[in-house]
Length: 100
Picture 1 (cartoon, helix red, strand yellow):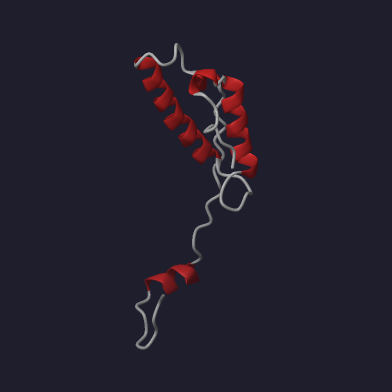
Picture 2 (cartoon, helix red, strand yellow):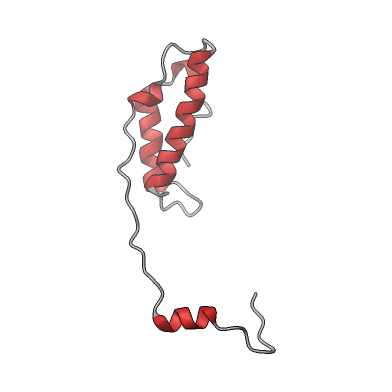
């Protein structure tokens, strides 16, 4: 997983942060197959909030996250349940069946 943790906050530049966001999309996550664009956008938002606070308290002159590009939001296609799947879901369990 990409990290910014070993860098001094006052030396971080927008390209360093953008690289991390790009790596998250490709190799991030538990399985190393990348995380969703919405996860990267949320990470960017929270990181920007933290850097805004650093600007507010005088640690930084400007927020380098603002110079990064958020990934374009990609939404997964929704696959609704079939009628049979919906019936099965709504049917009360039979006696002796347990769901774990």
